[in-house]
Length: 223
Image 1 (cartoon, rainbow, N blue to C red):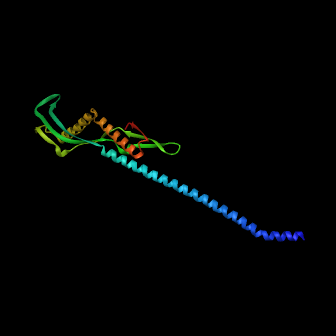
Image 2 (cartoon, rainbow, N blue to C red):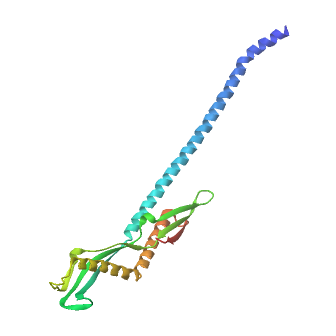
Image 3 (cartoon, rainbow, N blue to C red):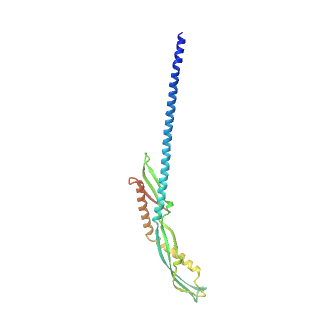
């Protein structure tokens, strides 16, 4: 008799037990979904931060390239070209075969750095905050050097039908003029002044971009 009563009581409370079990399962599932949703949210935030950081770094990189273009120094010059020649035979100068040319030609020389070669890296602390930017920059160099053919002016020319001034002579004079002007620049302080200008501009830009509390470490490397 008691056994029958016990079974009856069990059947009465069984629905309640099932409800509790289902409730626990539902709460567990909801909690699991909530945790998962939070993890997904955090993951999306990290991805977004990384994308934003990538865009920011790329934007800085493009700005650096523009700064390197703006800081390019255009150097104009006028080169004097002199040429004289006389035909000879076995070491003896042949009379009446001498020629002479005195002329000037203008040219331009661009001095600066190649912005594509500039690199920078961020150094962060344990919390991920940028504390230092390491900037590596090439030295200034002669980016291009050319003469302008239309500016050729001949001041004195003595030709001889037996030994005229040839096109090859003009070309050699132009090449020599460009080489001479290049040597003048390399022997002056122009490249150093260009270095000083780009260093000032880049450090100023990075301090503005990252803030005064971030250390900017500037270093040259050989081209």
